[in-house]
Length: 212
Image (cartoon, rainbow, N blue to C red; front, top):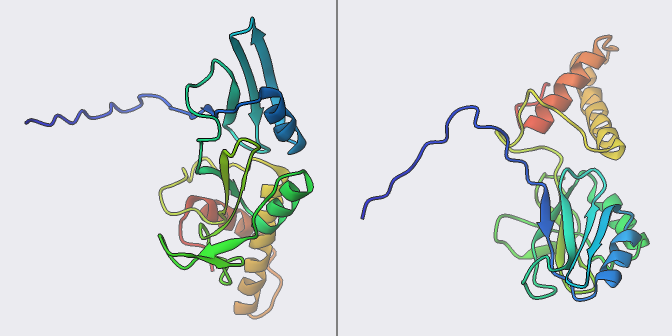
């Protein structure tokens, strides 16, 4: 048996994940649920009795969800492991709960594949603190707190923030880190703090070494 691995040509173009289809049994009920979460309603197209597509986009997300009639043959409620990345898991959990989602308590894992431990990671590590909830059909969503990306996960030349809250959280982390930086250099005010903030925020998002 011969395995042929084809190389991807350079500059082949972006492949951006746009939409994920989730299976639901009651379209209007699902629409009420996601509207209640304050997700953006982008479309509700009906074509006769056999086709309907509803599109919602979570706040700050570049990708959306579809559900409706004639969208997917999957069993209602069978979607799971739908990740929602957040910069402050406690705040995200509180907002979802206030908007009608039955969200679990925050938990973390000591390592990959390890059993859950109650509470946010005490060290504040990225990727290890979670909470989860389901829609009325049982499609499962998982919140994951990510503040610093692993190396190579983000293009360092394209730093972006998807929401005001995400940018504000990054600024707060940069401010705290800069306070420690000023202590290390003798407690003097750093007049170049905007440059330091910018370097810190870009490095944090790209998963590169942080300035000291």
